[in-house]
Image (cartoon, rainbow, N blue to C red):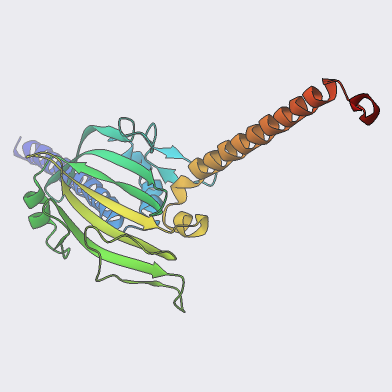
Length: 258
């Protein structure tokens, strides 16, 4: 009887150890995905692809035709449609991630602004104190910035460099692109961490960091070409109509006029 009980105890202990090991591995993989996100580059999407079975338990994922895995939102251009809330809370180093947001802000004179990141069910101070390995610097009274970089096409070689002038109110100058990590207060109890790439962006630079945007950019380009086509067709019709009107008017010869 003793050996039977001992065998049961050993079996239960072994099963418990395996279960805890699986939980630890799952948490470690989830941490890797968010750790990579904090680098604000394309490796985040590689980690989503690698651990999509795990992450899809928290939020639905999508894959582009180029096999880029990403977190989809309804629209990156509309404030009420650029966010998706998680099915359940994702624990990250003691913090609680509850949503994802993907934002695009075009401007006429200051370039393009792209933000992507996570919503935390934690205060700004809780996030900052937990992620104290990141050098958070004041951006304004409600926002912190970290790992600010600048890409200047005028410099050779053209590489990302540290940006000491990343402060609120300073707009990217022509020919430059900025990148950074932002910690922002949403409410008294919630905050967000966004990566951002902004400024005088071209397609190549943008897709190097955000390969998930390729389908959206292609759709925007197709829509733009369609608008240009319709505009040209409209102008051509107006021109033809004007020509027909002129031709239908009675012609007065010089002799009749005399």
